[in-house]
Structures are given as structure tokens and as C-alpha cells.
Length: 428
Image (cartoon, rainbow, N blue to C red):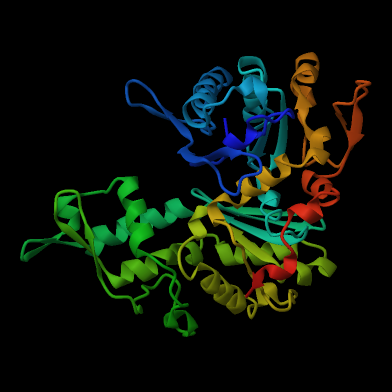
């Protein structure tokens, strides 16, 4: 139990979880950062790794894995009683209905939580920066997704995704090391592929975090005669020595450090890259919203935490705007937020702020209401039709609502005192 809860007679501070495809952030409402960031998988006794977001899991298998996973969250990491607290679940836009229903079933029936508020994770990233309007670019582990939010309302047709993320970058690093990487063994230099073969993902992640960055747009791309399938050789970074567990040193070349990130901008084989994703999302928005959205771009996700990522994305978008594909798009000046929070936890922080506001109690589904009505009570955020909702009123009369959680929060009387002033945030 957090020390600041001792002696308070009000309800316990809510638990906030943000379940990603690779990592899950967990903690308590009202805090600036999660208590723990844990893998989104269980390790069985036979060392088998099962990801709880695996779409191949059946309902029974998923239920078993979620019970184990949620039990670890409450009793291993947060050390709190689930029956005492409500929970805010920041959910993935593309998450299966089966996952949502099974998670709610596990939380209510296995752990008897007081109430649940389910809300889409990406729009929550706007709450810490204090604006209801923004274009959100989430560079995740397996994919990158983009969504536009205008005055607290999600523009559903603007939601796009491409299978380019941290994993694609890690595979590019592995491929480049296998092709040209060397290892310093004493006074000799040997091929990395002969000594180590393929590296574990944890090693590749460490190499990426310690050595890699986003360089300037390559000069070759400015040459009309250059074909994108060609090899980019231009780089300015120097080589680095990465210590291995056996005492040898892997030589990470400047090309790997600076140019391995090109996989995110070259595209996925269908001319879809992170830069095209952002511009295509803008094209799907109403024309009178585009200028505001283009001047309020927020980049989140662990895949975007490399130095120079914003600057490089801005260069790619500016170059694409000259192509005929985007001739109808006149977004004005491109500006990016520079928030004072870690990018990989922005959505969780938004959920933590939302969970601390009492004005949103109607957004929670109570345990009694769920046990009486079942999974039909789970809100469908993509539906514009009013949905039946338990309001926790003393009369027990359910109410109907059709607005989004973000819009509800922005209209809260407490939001002006909870959020930082927008003028204090840097735009570049």
C-alpha cells in the first residue's frame, strides 16, 4: 500500500494497467510513471513462453494465462488486494473482443475487482500534454499506428497501422551484423556470424539502445537516379565497441548505428512507411482539421526513443509532400510536441491521470452490474450509438453515454487544475 494512503477514509487509489503486445505498464492512478514495466508473457515450468496477446490462444487458454498474469501483477509487483480497488485498463485499438471479454471476466470473477474502466490507449497520450487535439504516432514493438483526435473525438477513419516497429529495426541490426559485423578477439578480428550466429533479442535490444540513433536523411535519396532498393552507404557515425558476455568486443560499425533505422522509412514492400502512414492519416481527416492536426503531432512508444527520431520523421514527411501522391494535402507547418514524460509510458500516464479524477466515476463498470449483465456491459468505444452504462447512482438507474473517455475528461471541472498549461510545452 502506498504510504500516502494511510489514514485516508476515501476509496483506495485505482490500479492502472496498459497491456502492450510486448510490454505491460502497471502502477497506481495519480503517479507520474508506472511502478513496473513487465513482459506481456508468462514463462511456464518447462520454460515455454506464452504471450498473453497471442491471437492463436483459445478462450480457455487465454483465461488460464490471464489469471496467472493478473495474479503476478497484484501479488508480485503491486502487492495490493484486488478487491479493494477499481482498475483502469488502457486497451489496444486492435485487441480482439475475445481478449477484452476474457480479461473482464477474469478481473471480476477471479479477482473480484470493484470496477473497471476500459479506454483506448492512444488518445490517453494527449492527457499529459493538456490538449484535446493531436495526431498521435505510436511506434510500438511489432507495428506503428497513427490516430487523429480532434477536440476529444476520435476520427476513426484516420486510424492506420503498418507492421514496422522496434522488432523490424532489431532484425535489420541482426542482418547487418551478420553481413559485415566483426568481433575483436585479442589482436585479431573475426566475423561475428561465425562466432555468435544469431543474437538473442535481449542482446539486440541492448545494442540498439546503447549505440543506435536516427541520422539525417541520406544524400542518396535526394539523387533522382537513386533507386530505393539500392544500398545506402552514406553515414557520419564512428564505430563503437560493444562488450559481449564472453569478454570479446563486437564492433558496431557507424553504418549499423546510423542506417539500420532506414528499415522504418524504406517501407514494407507496399510503399507504406511511418512517414506515409502519418500523411495518409491526415488525408483521411476532414480538410478543416488538417492544419491543426499537422501542427500538433505527438510521437509515443518505445520504438521512437532513439535520438533524432522526430527530426528524421519531419524530413521524410517534408520530402513526401512534394510527391504527386500528396499533392492535395496542404498541412501547413509540421510541428512536434516535446512532452516532459517518457514516450513509452505516455498512454499509461494519461490513464493514471484519468483514474485520479472522481468526475469520471460513471465510466466504470461495477462488479455487481457486470455479474448481472455479463460481457454485454463492456463499452464499445468505436460505436457512436449511446450505450447502456452503470452510473453508480444511489437509485441504481443506468444512464446512457456516447462521448469518448477523453472528451469526458476534458470537460471535467478538475481537468484544468490537473493538466499542465499547453503554452508550457515545446513545439518544434
